[in-house]
Image (cartoon, rainbow, N blue to C red; front, side, top):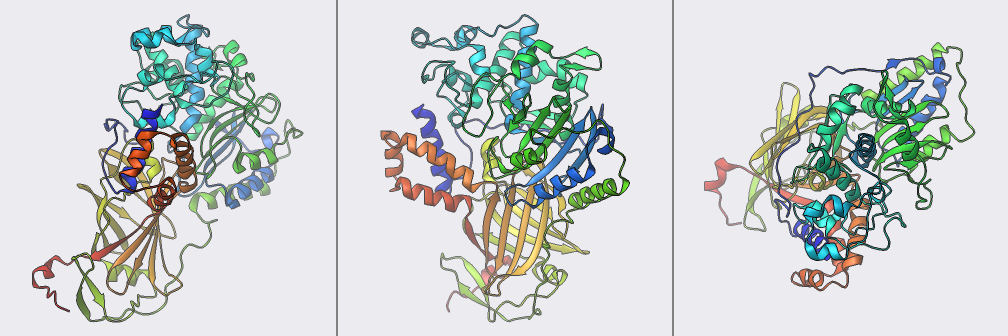
Length: 619
């Protein structure tokens, strides 16, 4: 496993040193554009909460608490009872009907595929994976391999040491998994590892000749009317299985409803009732504050309940005793099942809660619930983000001075005094282009770059444009210019092109001043198909330079936690210590530098090409 950990350390070190470009894994664009024009199929019937035995007031209180919690960042919420949607809310700027990254929630779908394969007689639970993939193993490895069964993969008990961090080490993930060392006896200890699920996907391909996506399309996605989806593959063309699926919230709900209906949909048995019974049973105890693990899904607090769970808040929660399904998409700062968001939901649906069969309609409460959802979808429930600026614009005389790194910037002779309204400010900065002194920061959060193996070429310039009441900010990154419209009060929709993959974004802006009266443009660039946001505070200094303080959420806490686990394992590794030693970096310094890499501050100087030749360098 040292090879894979060294690859992670190398990636981190390259980020810290400001090196842009790819990893050891071959990049190829594969993400399609969201199919806006595709007709949505088999939508659920909508009904009032009361008609299905739950009060509108309960959902209103739940949504308010989820929205108000500083530990949650909700994107989509949906609730079904008796197969009808009784509450749905999309939190601005995440629009209704948009697909969303599911992270590990899709592991449960891969588990469904294994159940189908077994039902078709093409696979058995007790098969040894080293026999299934004997052609992928070297002769020496075969001699010392323990027996790892398909069931061990399903229950996360394989013990294989090649895990998520190893995917940055090369293109052959399957070969690395099969030839990796094994901790302990397979089948005895729960060790969560997304590569177990990846190998399940590879088994589907091995036995059928189809990718997991191709296999599931006529058997699951098609019959459920799921048409707007996309599942990433590894460099070898194997569907990732344990992550990388984009899916709409209502389609996530269909997958939960399917299990409530014992695998039957429109009279067709898609997943066998037997498979649903054994896969949703607890096979293993898990860590504290979780409720156990089945076959690629988690047990929930209520007896008999379970969930498809993905990090940062991607969940399908199934309550068989209440005939209910809840769906969440979020960008929380917590990883898995033991999190604030799920604890809030458990508070409103505790073990002793039992909804009625039906309640009297309550038009007032229902209209208030609908109004709340409308406010959340329009961003009206957010704190006031639009802060007016103080002071008036002064046409100061510009003097020139040599910049500290031999480039040139321009100094205004008095403190910058920007207009009091943002339209005047936009007119004042329109046409300006700034060159970045540090050119290794990307518009995409590190989370997006690493998960999709789509690393930045570095932003070299930013510029501002104001025309007919509209404001844009443009980022030159590599050979591409991302021109993003900026909304004030409500985010404006845009798109970024990351090496041929298009990501939809919504950009919200706010003009303010900091405690030193320095003008600041605050930007929040939300990747609406993802869990994360890119944030930037642009400070306009008196020398006509700018400083950009970058951040992403969620990000820092989780990235540093992952880095800590890797550095602890590698602390005694000679190659790792040599790698750091070549750059005079200690482990402690590595963590401090990584913090600065996650939340960098970079300066830029004003670009005035028409004056470049006539600049007098003498002060």
